Image (cartoon, rainbow, N blue to C red):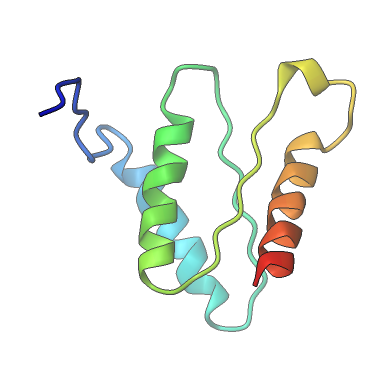
Length: 95
């Protein structure tokens, strides 16, 4: 048996943000193009929120791309967006 810290799979205090992301996702089904950007100071739960939203999108058969800002690449414009498109290209190549 393995032991370790088990974190809950619940996003606390971000219901409004998660609902906003869900609205963007639903909006895309009407033929609209939608991009959502999650921004804020470090340690505020952005990655947790994005991961929870990704679970919802993937469970519905949707496509979820993400890119994370890297302070070491801050001189490279749009590095997070580039990361997301790289992820998408890798998905296309592997399928």
